[in-house]
Image (cartoon, rainbow, N blue to C red; front, side):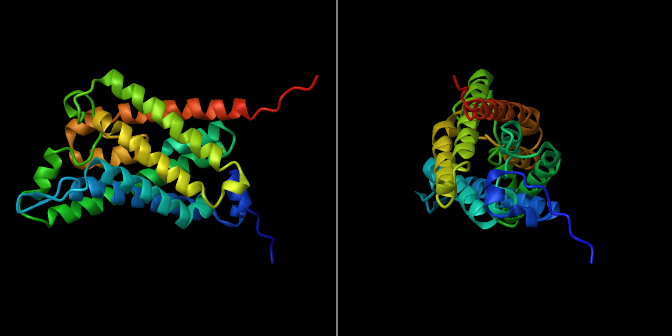
Length: 263
């Protein structure tokens, strides 16, 4: 029988967990599943539970609940399938890892496509649930933006494009930088998903009022597709800014890990 050629070892966390035994298809499926879970949990919470009211009594989870939903979703996804794909679930994370030399560039297109497809599937499930809800619920959800990101009139707090771009670049750089750092050390392996999830929670607490928090182009695209023309017209900002932040984090990680010269 012919000897099976192992899949390239792409990231340090994958090498630790012998990801060379997983095919590219398995990795892409894992990324799609993780992005699906992230959008289902995060966007679903925004649309279905953030401002829920019963008989006039406010029962919604609010900003804190939404932030926790995104953080817990990414944490659960990493624990579930991170050993297969590295648990990116986010094009910005994948690009940051590639720039840092922790993921091979040849895997980037497959990861990104899988993440976008998974995110769209998650948004589709949320949309289907809302559409089968009370009369007018789907129209109301789209009118409210369907958890999409935006600036100006579409920013929750009315923040302009400059503020939105700045906070998305900075917070994505922080997020990707934390992931690169905690996944680079074997001793942090068990707690890395918790650190990543809590960091994403904090990021949402900071930036929900500004941009409704992206730091993830796949999440932004998924929500915008359901929300409609206004969100789609602004989604470019939530592709460009997170990717720019990822570049900053990737370059910084590579420079900081460069061995010091002797002598």
